[in-house]
Image (tube, rainbow, N blue to C red; front, side):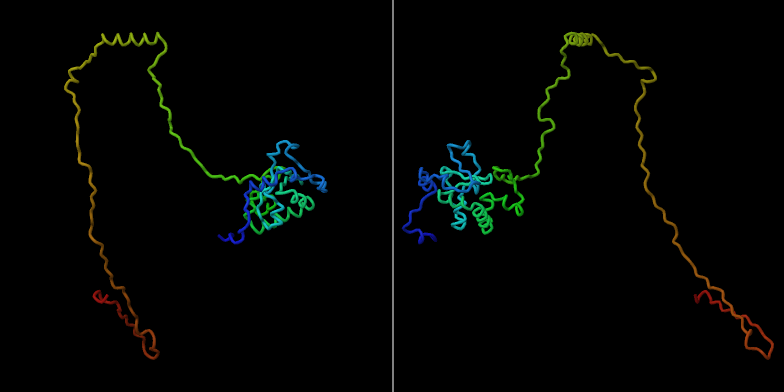
Length: 263
């Protein structure tokens, strides 16, 4: 609804229609138009395993990403693939390939700048090698190798039964014929055997006796309570030893001990 005013009167083509319109012989990239000696032009009929080439930017046109401000346009590898620094680039038309060949580093840096404005393009276009400092998944640095998906790890455990298969071991089984005959003779001899018991006169009257006792109980005893008395401390005072210079000294002993009732 928002784009309808801008698309009225215009023919909206699908990606398949766009590829069909640019798949003629006139749309193929001409190697004579490329003056950069560092760039190699590859075609389907002259390159082995052409369909397995790791096209950069996940098959989108890098020229359109820079010129049209991050516009995702599928490329057409059938018109030719440019190889630059062991990387493979495909474009939507041959004119885009010619402009890219004139300044490849400029367009490669332009795609990186576009990814900085839209960080979601780093994962979509597989630009992990250009942003190795901010992503932990900088894999696939070897030439011609695609970026591998991050490996997700988790702890797991399994539990099995102790004996998940039933045992069918018969311990009484014998494979030896003579051993079977020996057991057969043993069982045949038991048929003629009797059980004998002997008892004396003294053991005839013996029997088992049981006795029962009362288990000891825990018992407590309590003695008389503790008591104490406080006796008065003897205290005496000698009077008349001082203050009698002119007369004869008369010494008197005064008993200061308190009575028991007062303590």
